[in-house]
Length: 589
Ligand code: FEO
Ligand code: CA
Ligand code: CA
Ligand code: CA
Image (tube, rainbow, N blue to C red; front, top):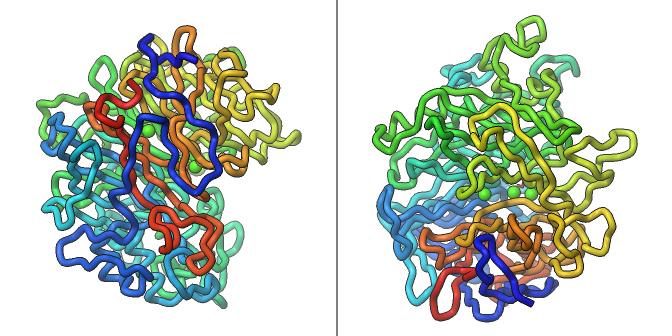
């Protein structure tokens, strides 16, 4: 059959069949390579990882590519440039899996060295990359290469910086924080920096054995409950070794996580900024765009069952002529909104501003900093619409005001909880994608209309919907997560959880959005056993597509692996791959 792209041209690939194989699968006529793996040395002087990982140390990990690559951003070699053959790749490292990293690992009793290696394997990497013969490679020891880890000093900026709740015994200023954890997706800014999103930060905090928990109505505990921070031993046990993860010693430390972090990849000395104006929740990502009047807009999902969709609109306006400092400050002064979806397929962005909409001292919100630190509670107060885990939220670069919202799944949407217009399925195991259209096609608007693009799943299931397309002609799809736009203007949907929903490996799916091809889901890529398909990201010329193969072999251990990706005989390792059209050309053309 003939596959069509957004722009009406024929898509230049034959969709692949869904796969359960322990390998990357791409369409005929496409090639791929693995070019960067967990443990590969980035910083000059760092040794490579031995085949049995026995030389993995804190020092090795601090100079090497981290674990569980998730968000991927390619920026051209020069700031504001358009190069595709040379650039910087920024990749974040969501979380670690000791059972796949260490030959000898007892999850109930990790060693202090293992904990410190895992802390060093979190964060992000900035890596110089270059393209040769279609394939991408990384430059070991590149001058701009950088590791950002769980101990990298960062600055809190914006309205909540310095807030009493952000102060700890080691940082009485409430502005200096160490490290970033559980970074999921992210975004690029128009000024060439990277935003990365702190997601399930709650899992890092706990009470050591024997330490007493505060009363259940303790205000700090109440705040932490809303974010899933539990007063019990954590799964990771870091609180045994590092005071800031011990809730009995540093009860405020969790307030310093759950933010959007900005990194300047062109400046290896840049101190990353946690921008409090964008609110605190389990941030999935932060894709930005510019409103017609010049204001900077960031779309933000809170990836939790029954949590909310947000957007941020700056007060000042973006200009390429602004200084870098002026543009970065746009993320410190603006309005955070939360979404309500109505039955008539309209919706509203409700401002989370202290003193408005019930966000008052009488209702327990001390000030604007408190509103942002407890953004979820603010959303509860204003009556935001509980969603089925909002993941990536992607504005269409070609059609102003069109925005795509991936709701990955929600198996706890039971009869008792009920559905709402924007989350219409009970036991939503497959997820859906909402198409939101801002009023007047203005991303700065405070009202919108919306419709479904996809109700995902097995096309033979009656509850599914593929934008109106013939369901006998589409690829099965489940658990939409990361979103990106293709060079042809179509939506690329990456999945996180197809093995659970459809017993198929995770994938990239190509999805035209308009005309007679709307909803024609066509699978482009499949990742190995246990892996999640992350990224996706294209070079500016569209000739390279990046995929972050996250947690291959998930469910196995290093001693008993269920995947050997990417290097047979070495267990599974998270890795970066590049994909290109064999012989050259724009991917998908
Ligand atoms: Fe880390 Fe929301 O996926
Ligand atoms: Ca994700
Ligand atoms: Ca995205
Ligand atoms: Ca996910």
